[in-house]
Image 1: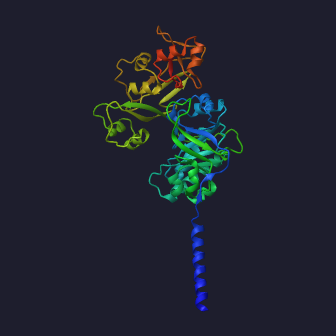
Image 2: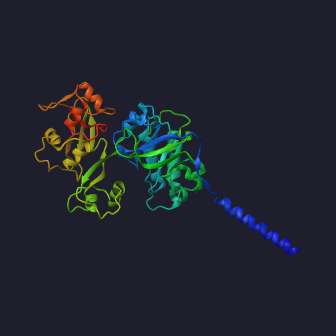
Image 3: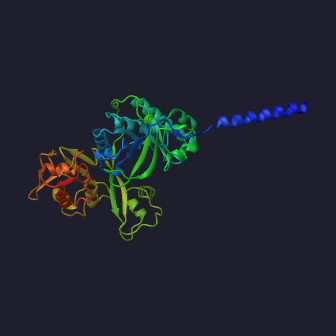
Length: 422
């Protein structure tokens, strides 16, 4: 009898231990928080100018847009993405690319994020994109994430959401974050497969299911997403003003054509970046293998009210170390000859840090007032929301005429500050 009782006691202890182990490390399969599913995209300066009327006609309902990165980088297309997406009746959300390695930096970046989006009216929860951790521990990552999210909530009075890839959702972001903040997950495949995957979250409110989506109105590929209704804010209102303690930087993309003898490290040094960043943004598998004629995308920074100033339709750029006139011309969609002419530059190969380069010389940017430029005809400086067909109609010319005269490769892709010769 005693042996039987002893076996029962041992069995009970084992069952209790198994139950404790299972409940202390409980994980959940991922399912949508509700039905129906809303079609969406997420965008940044990668996509350039977007025709949101075509995007909406293609069935897209929700657009998440990058607003900022780090403590001082504002996406240069954020304002125009917001204005044009809203104007076309799309639901909009904002995300910040977090780079903090301390909780102090997390708080600073949350304040910067809030200052960039201040005054706008989001329809969706404010998102944290935190995927580059700089070698900090898992515990530190979770603390940094929580400080960022709570600071954003406090400053904006809006709900927040975590964007994460599957690996970090499984092994980096802990249960406490999962219990307090919803999930927008990157999973490239059939989202129904997430039901067989275990994480600390029970449900998702968004899935980024592809980074190679093709959507009308967008040149090239775009991230495709699906969302549930829970992604939407319960209350939409204008975001409060928040003081920006940082000097805002706008990122710009330029494309460098590889020359014979170039190396990725030399290109990185020339533009003040790293080989790792060039590898990442250009999807380069082997940094030692680049070839003559290859186009390398480089992100450069220009300080708003510093390296770039705007007023009454004009743009003035302050030359930085490493700049060339051809790179500046490429960044603003103008020609070197145009910059040489309006700046009276004697030697286009000789510019110096601190030099002021006028990009445009317009005194007006209204569609009804073309800018006369000596004997060379008229030019128009593109404003937010402009289309080539609108400009052609105003000036009584055809779209094809403008395409040919301005050597435009994609008639759906023009951007603010670009000079159109009429």
